[in-house]
Image 1 (spheres, rainbow, N blue to C red):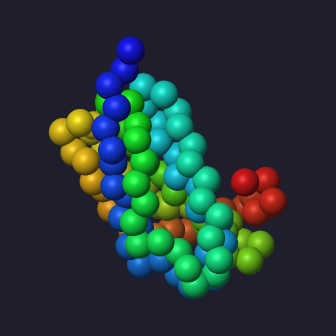
Image 2 (image 1 turned 180 degrees about the vertical axis):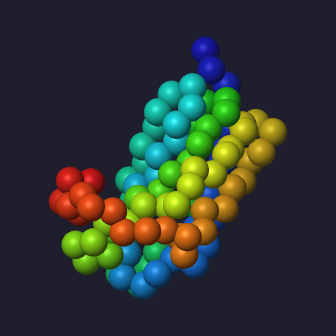
Length: 101
């Protein structure tokens, strides 16, 4: 049975108008967390419980119909590291449709 830790993900420099955030934790398991937000109401930090292990964190988000992808995965090692920051200003437009997320 895996042990779980609570991880805090800070979302730095979020652009205005985000209406969907998808956080992907790739590690011992691939875990996807989807957050629906109102434009202008993107949280500065979100908290999740995840099984302990080594992860890479990637963030997709949509502004209108445009999808953006964080530029590089952010490493996360649970339980040694209980918080991580993803800088959304370091993101680029992706060529998939927002409705597919």
